[in-house]
Image 1 (tube, rainbow, N blue to C red):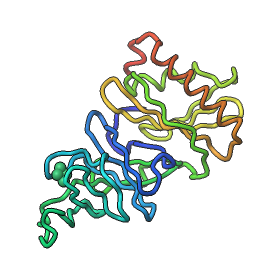
Image 2 (image 1 turned 90 degrees about the horizontal axis):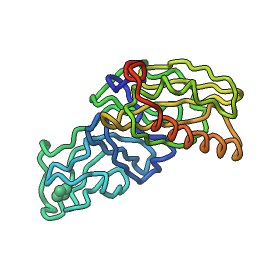
Image 3 (image 1 turned 90 degrees about the vertical axis):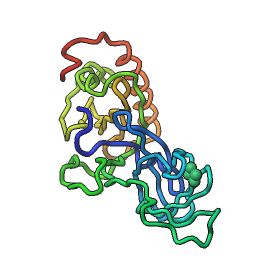
Image 4 (image 1 turned 45 degrees about the vertical axis):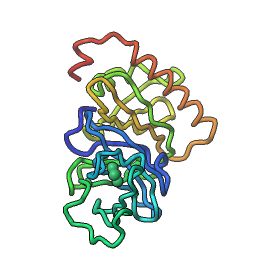
Length: 230
Ligand code: FES
């Protein structure tokens, strides 16, 4: 679970419904994650080229997203297609928002801040998962993985398998979780957590409660040299 150099998780798939957008950061770089009405996810720089408004404040209309400020509309490639103040203008191709490769796997949206990327580097994990929640933690992402073995679910033994840089398979008793770590900023992380397979509502609630307790334990754990380098 290291800072992003390749694919990095940015949201649970279930958190970004069709026609919605959300802002987040990768190592302090602001991005918008949005889903068009056809269900395709997109990750772009979170900045309108006009006056710099965050696109995550915008509105999704079909396969376009419109900036909140002056309503400029962008297609799924990030190209501006319509400027309300100049409705007859053929918009120059230079008015474009940088867009990044995006893939969904294991119930998580991943990007790598490049236009294209090799999806084979993503964790090999089934899409048969139950989303639990995204957990925002005031600790660097590198400090978290070494603490997870000390956080059993209902006292059951813990084992962990590294799936890729940024993702682990966490097993405690009968529960198996994909925990995908996003480095939001130097001292802030997001863990996107999904249970492997189908779990019932009671189990989901219990895992969500474990996650909340884990967040508290991680934030209050002493910062040790080992936690910094693992
Ligand atoms: S800042 Fe986005 S349309 Fe003006």
